[in-house]
Image (tube, rainbow, N blue to C red):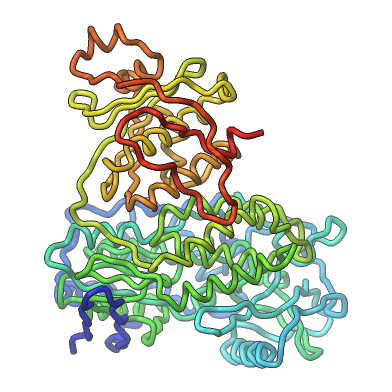
Amino acid sequence: MPFPSVPPSGDAIPPATTGGCPSPPVYADLPAVDLIIRLSQLAREAGLRPPDSVPPPRPNTSPTFPVFDPTDWPAAPSPLRASAWRTLLRQYPEPSLPRNIIGMIEHGAKLGYSGPLRGLGRPAASVPNLPMDDTSLQHVHDTVADRVRTGRARRAHSGERVVVSPIGTVPKSGGKVRTINHLSWPRRPSSPSVNDGIDPALVSLEYSTLDKLFGSIRRRLPPGDIWKADLTDAFFHVTVASRDAHLLGFHLDGETYVDCTLNFGGRSSPFLFNLVAEALHWILESFGLDCSHYLDDSFGLAARGMGPATLRFFMAVCSALGIAVSTSKSTSGDSVEVLGILVCSSEARAWITQKRINNLRVDIDRILAQPRASPLDLQSIAGSLNFVSRVCPTGRAFMRRIYDGVRDLTNRWGSQTTSGALGEDLRWWRSTLATWDGVGIIPRDLPRIEVWTDAATTRGLGGHLGPREACTKTFSVQVHPRHTGKDIFFLETLALLTAFRTWAEDLKDHEVVCKVDNAALAACLRSGSCDHRATQTLLRHLFALAMELHVTLISDWVPSAVNDVADALSRFDWPYLRTRRPNVPLPLAKPSMTPIPKPNPATPLAGPPIHDRVTPLPFLPPDLLLP
């Protein structure tokens, strides 16, 4: 039965598709040949064709620590079916991922722990659980009972050495809560936590974004069906090794328990589960399904009318592998909510709902009303704003100092002042959310324009609009005395900001390709973040202006030799331009460098009035000019 698809009317936000997904066929324990035949048939019904060559290896699949021990055994039977994984990964281009997946199924997953708690215990009497109201406490009781019933947790044996950590809840979307094991408790050198013994560098991940889905929507005409599938209790699919299970203890009502699977709160849980998710992703690609995944969420764009068949194929693969899929959270259609973002294929738009915006404003106001913010508050608001920045990419430049605030907290009971840099970024978000409609455009055919810039450490800043063979406008300015001799990274960023403020009217409603010969700047334009504090301030001004102009930023690094025109403009090398690039229009006049007044900090960052020509441009941001 086709899924409902509600086209938007006017500027109204289309409702997300709320239908479920087809019941998956059960392909457990089929012989390898029969399994391949049946899955291939479902793939053809979904309009999929196997790729011409074997898909490349997936990222995030090269752990630098052993994820299983062949002498160990799983703490509980694994729900994953080793025979199906062997069959469907038989052509994977590298042996390590199939070996690790089968090893974790048959021997249990190692947590990557190398701290002093190995083989020791921490009694429950010394561990306070997290504060919980009656509703949260009842949720924890129900969760623990379900874990024990399904074999995901067990009661500790008499005399067993168990490292007990606090248990509690954290908020989820829709007013719900999630049970979490606080494995980062306590953060004291004299009493280390379980997570302290897991090196973050060993379990870091590069997460997927919605960019691939947005790109598919932009390229596909006519529009297709967006589909998404959500795995049920994702971390519980991975059983831990018996010798590591004692690290996952918790207590409730006088009883001590041990988790037998990965849990929420473990530092290595996302990395270990993602090995399974990446292997599943590759299997889907091997049948021709182009998709993305974010841990337990898979999504993509199918041909119009093929969304249900695509979901049926996806669920059949998961059924064969022993992966549980939430039918209530898996759906397809023209408008589907993906990772908290409502995406519409036919309109090529993405929405943050007004309800989510209002909730964010309330949370920000609550944090700013206090002199200091708690770690949980900062972690929660950082996660929420991260979702918003997927629709509002320019907001990424206003996330760095919030992330820094989370990182700088040394323990759960510490706090971060809201009066400094952290408060400035939160106030920017509050002001932006007050006027923003939550709509982000996924442009199909925005006009593209190039901006080339460069900086000379002791001379000036220069740039041109359009390619060097056919540029239409140029600028060339002296570096303000306060910035002469500063780091070239800072000056290159300042040159790009100057270009945006100079040609704001030309860049408005365009896809702007920023041609820069500084690799660090090119990377920061993609992420919106850098470690250099003064340069991050410039990026914040640049991204705020890009948002105001409805500009899509594209970063493109070019060799210095190719950037010769902007280089000559930054060094005021008029002879070079006259002899080697006679078609380049020279700047009309030199701009004034008069500092501009410091703005009201309660208002969002914005550029100065737009001018038709280079003079007079007071471009330097006020917080970099004034004492």
